[in-house]
Length: 169
Image (cartoon, rainbow, N blue to C red; front, side, top):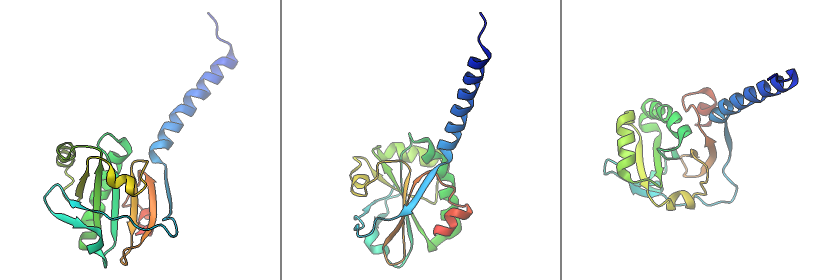
């Protein structure tokens, strides 16, 4: 059976487009300002190590709040860069990683296996915190300044050690 040259070319082009779209999907992110006039929702909880966190008490320090899940490939892709960022910034930046709609034990297994020792992981098993923050895409990260104001929302996987992300911090 002979396939026309035109059909072969179209099939090849479709294959290239699919591969390019897949690669681009993992590398894409959108950064935009926090919506003007939108109040910052509360965030309080206990991390996987038993430490209590309350966003209202972190005024004076910049905070990065990352919403993620273990089933989310882009989330897992960016986690090592969040770990590195937390190591590099130390006490100058608080990194809170809110694990959404999963049991704490599942998040703990992932965190341990990935060696994410510097991230403060707060379980959100019912997704209530993520809903309050308007999170519908994973990963989503909200950057909060020293005055406790949300300044930027980033959806999609980001290299948090890269120059663009460093410019946001």
